[in-house]
Amino acid sequence: MKFHYSEPDAEGVKIMDGSIDNLNIEELLFRDAVKISDADIGDHYKNKTVLVTGGGGSIGSELCRQIALLHPRKLIIFDVYENNAYDIEQELLCTFGSALDLEVVIGSVRDLSRLEAVFEKYRPQIVLHAAAHKHVPLMEKAPGEAIKNNVFGTLNCVECAERFGVDKFVLISTDKAVNPTSVMGATKRMCEMILQSRKMSKTCFSAVRFGNVLGSNGSVIPLFRKQIENGGPVTVTDKRITRYFMTIPEASQLVLQCGAMANSGDLFVLDMGKPVRIYDLAVKMIELSGLRPEIDIEIKEIGLRPGEKLYEELLIKGENLDKTENSLIFIERDTPFSKEDIEEKLEMLRNAVDSNDPSFAIEALKNTVPTYHPEVNHL
Image (cartoon, rainbow, N blue to C red; front, side, top):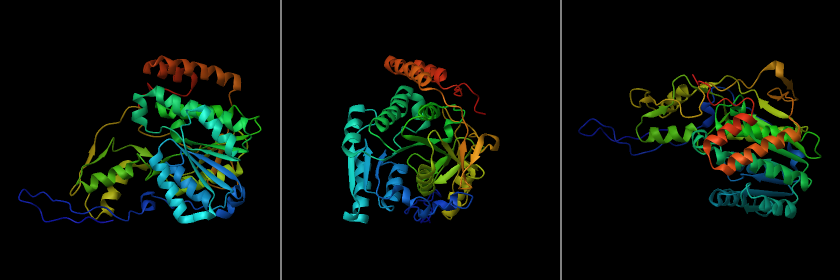
């Protein structure tokens, strides 16, 4: 990764005529990358029909790449955004050709009848549910949309999985679901609660919770890259802010392994080491570009955004976790709500969404997700 500059102009301003190339994302982890062998998960997905919702997104598309390597009977990519779905379709066709039985289906998880048609036609044995609204500040402005897509989209997928005999269903969750202060985190926690309430279902429901994914759409890496290419400043919300990070391949391999080992109601978390200061991440990206932080490129604090925590909750709390066969993967012990309790909560959320009143939606989330505290002082 390197910059190319022209000579300073008359006012001493450096003009960029190049861009950042060949960024090694693993250099930004501040730890060794986790490697999971295909041998650990291959048999679980081989000759199975696998459906990936949100299959065109950052995590979803990498899940599709990994699954394609494991010789599934059929891979179904379900996504509402046709451009992303087309991109991953063409990539997989180019890589695997006729060796991969691939189907791309355009549709929204909010559309129950569309989902029912897809589940009835293809009868997936494994569902990896990655479709979601995930952008924290944007969801603060549109809590009703977050509830519709994240909560009721997940509910639709769960109900279809039960109705059409899915063997295993894995939800992609987030560390922001731990004592959430954001709408996005609260909706993801509600999704976890829905799955945990189905513990007695014939379908094995589980969730995988991990931190920020380096290089994913909307993450800091593409933002910092663009800001550095433009000559700065690189913006951080607060120089003290920290996050847990993992790479897209790590996240995808974790999901696949957890899906293989899951029992119904399991909530998996990953030991990702120590959290990383976003400021340190900015410094390292600038240095990897061959420039000097705060000299060639300014790092500017802009203040925390709505719903944003200064520190994410620790994912690994030994007294609340069970070990698995993988030393980096743990299962959080949590008392599930009953299906009846969940249905009452869902009814409150339905009424809130129907009202089209953002304050009503947030109040409903506070009443349905006990750990959600939007008024918490993030500092």
